[in-house]
Amino acid sequence: MKGAAEEKGAQGANARTNAAASADALTAAPAAVDCGTAIGAQSTFTIIAGPCAVESRTQLAQVAATVSELGLHHLRAGAYKPRTSPYSFQGLGAKALPMLRDVAAEFNLRTVTEICDPAHADAVADVADILQIGTRNMANYALLKTVGRLAAVRQKPVLLKRGMAATIEEWLQAAEYLRCEDAAVLFCERGIRTFETATRFTLDVMAVPLVKQLAAATVLVDVSHATGRADLVPAAARAALAAGADGIMVEVHPDPAHAKSDGRQSLTPAQLMQLCAELTPLAVACGKKIV
Image (tube, rainbow, N blue to C red; front, side, top):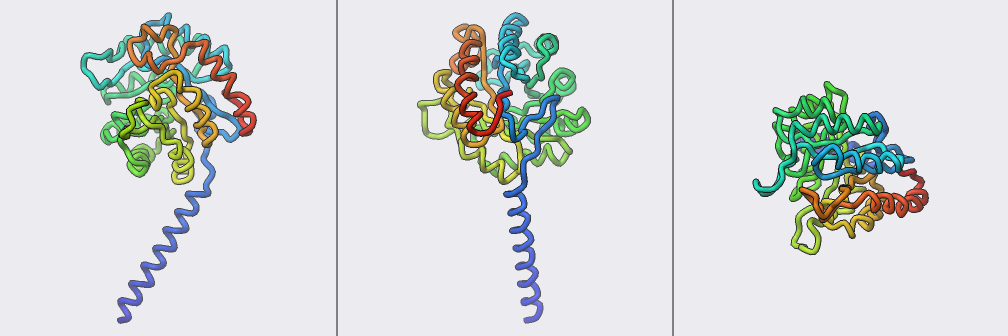
């Protein structure tokens, strides 16, 4: 009887300890992630903009010029593109990396691009300021370990997109593979697959405050993939800002109708300028500045 009582008491103590740890996690303030500029600072709302994929230096430079003109700091563009169909444009691969490096240097921008294969990891890390893990690789644990170690050594954060069919718990556990290697993690909600077909995916807006609470983390929203439609991007961006996101990722192409990938969801440079103008008063109301 005494042993059972002691065991019950120990279980109660463990439960109280776990509850206290959970409470600490819920109240901890997310720390800003430094990648040359701070992402996740309480007073800023970061916009990471650029084409889905690097198609040419001219195409990339046209977008980068607008990003720089707007006073933004981060350029996104894919060199390696994992696609659902093997017949779709897969990106320029290694040829895109020097274009991304040179254009970013010309316009003084930080770069975000995806690592899809451990074989490309070092080459991508030589160019990118933020290393991206895409939705299809969220559960690629070998890749997560490799990128986590690389990010820790290179002192570069990892942007981890949520798997298109992943629960929040699965997403958080994937991040632990990176954090176990001492990598700084940026979470990116990019929409999940549901029964709805009117949009490409369904934006889980409530994932933003949940992950910020549960992981004390910086959370961004990919408003282009979540909607799959350029006309819905502004509304998704406003929702992300209002929900407490630290920033958004948005696809921009100088000629979306002729883009080699994801043209339907890409804004033009002029539309990006309009989006920033529309978000500015809302950001001010939320006590933030768009950067």
